[in-house]
Image 1 (tube, rainbow, N blue to C red):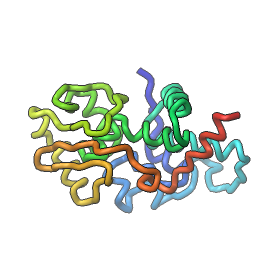
Image 2: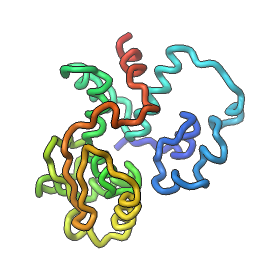
Image 3: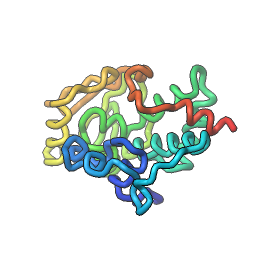
Length: 208
C-alpha cells in the first residue's frame, strides 16, 4: 500500500505552517515550525516568489498532507465533490472531514490523523455498532462512532481522549469521553473549518 514516508515535521516546514501531523508535539515549543520556520533544504531560507500555479499547487499539497490523502485519492474525492450540488470547494472539505479516520481524530480517539487511521485499521472502531476498518469510510450525519470494548484500555487511546478533552471539540460532533463514543451530528459549515485553508485555489487548479 502506498503511503507518504516523508518526515512529518518537514512537511509542515515546507508549507510554512502547522499541519498538526505529530499530535501533542505540535502544541509544544518542540514543534519544527517554532524552531525553524522556513522550508527544509540548503536553499530553504532563500525567499522566492511563487507563481499563481505554484500557489495553487502548494495549497493542494497542503490539504492533502493535512488529511493524509494520496494524489489519486484526493483527485477522486475532488471529482465527487464537483458532481455534488453547492460550492465545490466546500463540498471537498466536507467530504474530507467526513472520512472515518478524520472523525475518529476529531473525537479524540487518536492524537493525530495518522494515529487515528492506524486505530481504524486495527479494528478498534465501531460505526453504528458495526466494526469498520476502512479509514476512507464516509460517516453520515447521525452516525455513532465509538471505540470497541477491548481497545478501551489501550493507553494511547486513553491519553489521546484526555488531551482532546482539555481542548474544545468541533461543534459538528458530540463526544462522551467516558464512554469513548461520539455522534457525527452534521456536516461542518465552512466557517467552522480552518481559515488557513484556501480551497478555492484547489478548484482553480483542477479547473484548468
